[in-house]
Image 1: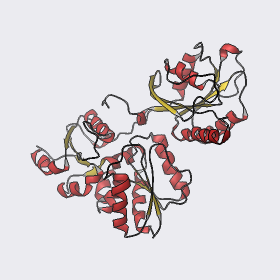
Image 2 (image 1 turned 120 degrees about the vertical axis):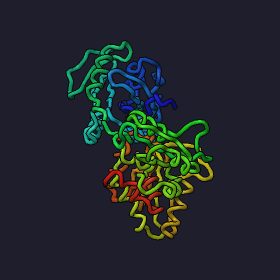
Image 3 (image 1 turned 180 degrees about the vertical axis):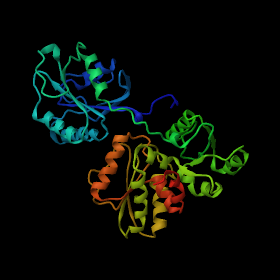
Length: 393
């Protein structure tokens, strides 16, 4: 991935919801100005949610999410509709697509009610204006368009632009730096590392360091001591991959602040205080408790995979308890968390801020402590206080 590409997690997520054959896929294609979604007269063409990244003015970088019809039939159809509702957990702006000839049905009113409850900005788009006359608006943001002819599509884009919340000025690391600071990034190269490239958290951190006018030095943990000795001045900060936390902590002088990429991301799009408190609940685990380990991305599992192999080993070794472990990845996150005693989440670099907030809030509502990889690893190795000291939590 180029450093100039906006990651999906940093884009505005626009979810499109409605009944089958209301023209959702046609609407996506017309908004985007190209054929992104399959269009068919056959009801139920869209099954699982389909994600498309686009640049749409005046919104900028976006992710358009096409969902299955809310009126999909049968057991499988109900599962598809449920998947559509789950998309709301990551939606920044919702489009409720309605066939202008049919009006707003009870199903569409139900999702509007859910959208309002989640405080998601939304617009009701009455599609197929080429087949009927525009009706009086029922909602604050209510517009008639034709995906077929393009009528009022520009007005819809402008309306979406007014609904987009101002971009959060939060920084991943830049607010901790001054121009001419030095940051040392420790990046292990192991069997799980993608060949020929750095993973997303490392790329984004490097970019933010450079945008701050600071200098980024990238090294492996095996060369860290020599790298520190070669620098002309003391680094402002050392940031490490969580898996190398203990070794890097031992090699980094106490007067140099130390943290991890995962902890930076917890502060950036999560809740560092909640996650730090969650790590301490390790001491409360009992025999037979179940721990959920959840990753926001999907990838090929290596023999020493951190989520499915290393973390369970470290947690079991620390607690000296026989525990059960369950795993989720990508868009999967259980709706019922009651059977878990602890949730350990990845740094969530692939999830947008909206979905991270939803997962944390879900855990808090269920009364289940939640933490993340880097925070938990630092706690297990006795270095959490040092790893979060910079953030004054």
